Image 1 (cartoon, rainbow, N blue to C red):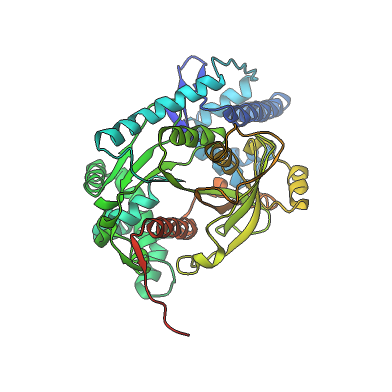
Image 2: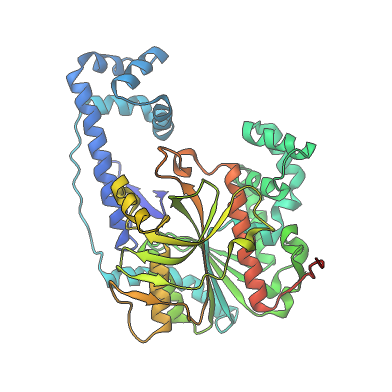
Length: 474
């Protein structure tokens, strides 16, 4: 079993690959991906078929650098793409090339189930362990704030687990000699960078905890002692969750950038935060719909996710207040509680752009230049995958009917506090300039943690936990 793009995959080793489908929009992602994979495989197989000398090369016991150069050029690949392919196939790179030369692919797809009720049932299965914890701890009737982001940034900023291990994390970076982190560590020590020491520790901690299971267990215990409970549901919907009890948090553990915003006393609030690893597409609708069904205490919804940008740079932050949802055909208008000015205490390198217009697309593989040009001419500058379904779920919790289709929907007077933040991970007009192609490097941490801190600041303000510091007179 493996996990890719928020879904579970199973390979029986005999030519059958199965994937859990958590919502209808999974098909918009899966089917084009599989079709594109087969097309590219068969294109390269055709080159081998028409060039027998290439087949002779891949049949060698080992590939010399000169052999790889010949293959790469014949297949029309850049050196960068070739290296990515080698990284993806790993130890099976050579054997996979041999298979590619020998056989053409003809994949078939078969779907089992996949009904609307089935998706709702799987989401209910996902929610059940979370609900059990809420009931067992008498938390079900408390004010609830929902966050869709990831399962590391909020825990890092509230628990202090990385800061308590600062020396060990630095020693681990020096031991592993990661060029990117070593360079940043030298700059931090010399005071030659505006980057945050905390961001550096958070990023270093990811690999450290991965390499040290015993430390990972200790981290989970420390978080649980501080009211941060991690839940790993086992349903088709692959979205880990965290239940955070505000009144059990210790301000001494908080990220200093949060403490600097004023006096924080979490003990004054009985609110809870449910934070999830952001889903894709209609999975977002089913999750928020399930939460809204099971509580009447939902007070705020905050979404932090990656997006493609048509007018900004990688690492910038985009704040939308209009979302066109391709799933429903609806255009949603709402009041985004965040503005570009709110980011000034937290965002160091990127820019924050507010009053953007976003389009929630069906799938990442269904985009092309003409498609993007159309939306850009209509002043849509953010391309993402969750906001529309979340707003559809909010509509159903605010109005008497199920969300409609092909309508203009005004959610400005929504009874919920709504904040949607996207950080730019892709610039589609610039070929290969994506975090998906390059990986979320250390420098992507600035926008991620600036957004996380802003969301926490908003929740603390809404719950009365934060008393803002007095600003100096001007």
